[in-house]
Image (cartoon, rainbow over all chains, first blue to last red; front, side, top):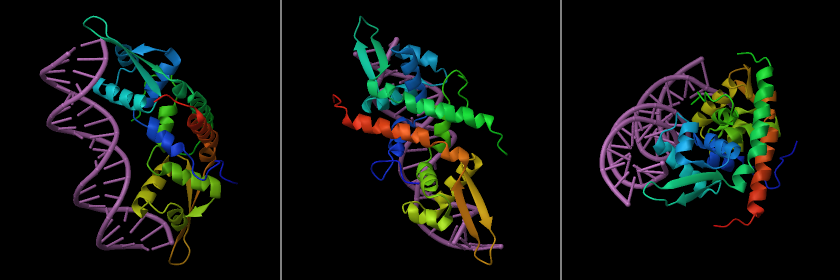
Length: 112
Length: 112
DNA sequence: CGGCATCCTTTCGGATACTG
DNA sequence: CAGTATCCGAAAGGATGCCG
């Protein structure tokens, strides 16, 4: 068996570094599935996350081009919307693969 | 890191928790590509890792059923071989997806 | 409404030394 | 050869409070 990458190294570790944060996948998937969301909506969608963490992880995702942020400086309470970029959405097939891997795995009787 | 009560979402976060360690992907991929390896061979294959870390990460992978360990209690110096399980090998398609995502991304002219 | 700054806790990665 | 046992520093995660 040969390595399946065109180069010698697999970029999977890089991908993991990019979306390996505790909440990044959840955030991304909410945005991919539901489309654009406001900050508060994301909080509701992922109740266990704190605002601090949500902000941090969103900043990371934004910096890496997986999520984009749109600010609507409305009256006093500003409105901020987030959505997945094309790059972000492009991760779907990988997620799907992980999903089917998980499902297959659940069915196989593993010895503890 | 395990609750993720939202059962409607992908298990990708769980997958990441399982193989998100700093060296786990490298180890897994070496075992997938090269097949069975001894402890010392893994060290050589991943020079930057220390024995402590290699042991730890291997234990995790073993506990999660992605790697299996075979001990050959030979004479004094025992021999231990590691190899990827079927479950572990089954992650290949996901890695491939990540790879092509990465390649596509590199080619796409992203606005800064 | 969003979000930055601060501080604290937990987890992770790693160096070193010792053992069967 | 292939570990386990400690100990430590760094980093990630998280709670709280103030601000535009």
